[in-house]
Image 1 (tube, rainbow, N blue to C red):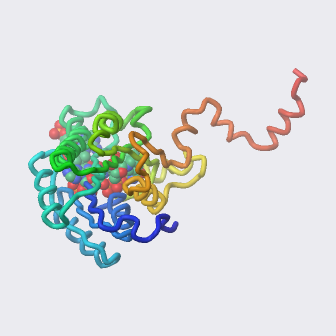
Image 2: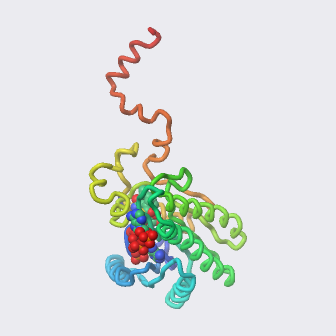
Length: 286
Ligand code: HXC
Ligand code: NAP
């Protein structure tokens, strides 16, 4: 559970992280700071951001600028970019990490409930991408987008349908712009994490008694959930220049979860050794 990149791997890089004051955004940001980056963290709740910024600076010695911003409001994102440039000069990377999600049978959702999730996940990501991308292109600066999706961005998933729609759109955006904006030296990649415990995700996806009923680790071949540092290592690599030839990729980090649950015979892991012994003994006898 150690940091993987060499010291100063992100020295003098300025990275914006949406939703950077909590959960995975905060953990990834902390590692970027340890590697020498300057951080701009944004979300709707300024008090949360400010507290996180103070703690992160204290823990790492790095510089963190907290800026309140609702990613559904284009002008607020433009303000983040201005403030980030005012503080640090140039922006090098943007991580689209902010999200909204909750579980519900789809027929119970109002159209407003559907909107609220898709707006944060998809509109928030394309607004941030458009504002940051136009700024880089106008200034002839290179740039790097890293988008946090989920493994159900390609499989879809019941009970989180607005999130699945939003994340699928973000994946399409990632792959499309990786091609279109490569001529401006702007890369776009994504990470698809499996379950990594955070207060934000667990409280909305495993509320109440569900957390006792469904242990996410049981769905995962490695039989454990992810460690934040494991994700931070991957994110730091993708946001750094070491991954300079990776463009348009989505990297899954889920302990084998989505493949296991799509595999026709994966459930045969429930067969005990004694039964395999019996099946072997009786092979060809029927
Ligand atoms: C059904 C719901 C609902 C629920 C809200 N609504 N919660 N419907 N089930 N659990 C409906 C409301 O009735 C309302 O519709 C509409 O949604 C908007 O409700 P608000 O009260 O305005 O929204 P609010 O509940 O305050 O906020 C919803 C939210 C919030 C914005 C999505 O949860 C949030 O701030 N989330 C940010 C953080 C987050 O979600 N993190 C988890 C990411 S986890 P009506 O019609 O009544 O007006 C993730 C990981 C996935 O993405 C992969 C894991 C392996
Ligand atoms: P989290 O802590 O709840 O993170 C979500 C962040 O988004 C919060 O900081 C929230 O801050 C911010 N946000 C929500 N709405 C916003 C808006 N309109 N404008 C700006 N910021 C907004 O949950 P997390 O688990 O760390 O999730 C982080 C990312 O990882 C998400 O993209 C999620 O889909 C993805 N992911 C997580 C898991 C997991 O197991 N944890 C698995 C797969 C993918 P405010 O409330 O202050 O705005």
